[in-house]
Length: 397
Image 1 (cartoon, rainbow, N blue to C red):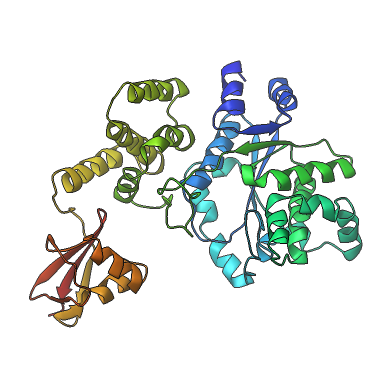
Image 2 (cartoon, rainbow, N blue to C red):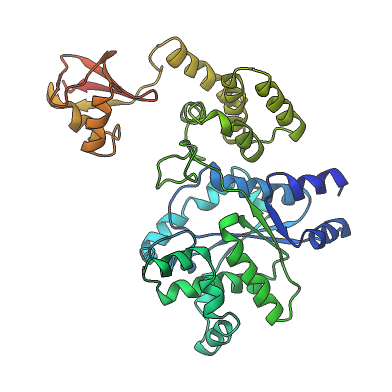
């Protein structure tokens, strides 16, 4: 592997490596390495925040190493306590199975699934005997676990910590033993859990995995991490138009970070964009480039160009989208708040009222502020909420 490729793997979008010198030696040795990435199926969809790690895995895969996609179907029953201020809801086997369905297919939008090792940690964790579990729990102390910032905060605020949550890092660490991984990759919030893997590998006399942490990608609000829970995400399976519209809404200060973590644009080009923005170029120009680059990964170049043209028609020239969801209704009189909530134009009645008060709702291009407004639609009515949500109502004949 060339020094340039090694440098790209070790530095692009990387926060920290434990231990960097050791990993660099491994990469230069030419040895085929086993790269572990675990994900618990606590939701059904992946977004480009997850793709930050997937893209790093792709770099290793392109260099000839073995990528292991570990589906935490067993650890999902506990739920990772990282970053949580309360115990996660325990998932049923049916919920886990449903969430797992599309994970592999979605990961295949970035990784070559024909060259990947997909594993499920129920294969070994479900078979652990009590004697083995006691041996594992003796490797880490309660004091060490309580040193974690999230556990420490919950203790200070007198918030309960379930005993099962103490077991989570041990179980994740044992995954590394079972897989004999050389490297584990995850977000910065996973550092503690991944380092436990090194402790357990040392206990079992295995070579210690190096740990690579990657940054958390903020969502569309620019504040919270990208998550379906915060409704600030860009899903890997979304349409090109949805992706482009969402990317146009990110804060200007995140443009370069999105380029680095969510695209394949060379580092030198990203640095050039940064200098041009500093010198006064309009950030919107680079958001459009960013939108095209992201969409090319999950769709294709033609879809990216079409999405940009559609965005410019709708938002720059104030035209309606060419494709609008159509909903047939049985009556010609229906309350605007009910329409918004029942068709995902607002998450709740209170949000619908707030959007109306802010003037964010248009009916046939006319703003509506009255929350008691009833839609009377002899033929068809187009509702617009905010900049990106449209719905056409048609009365059934």
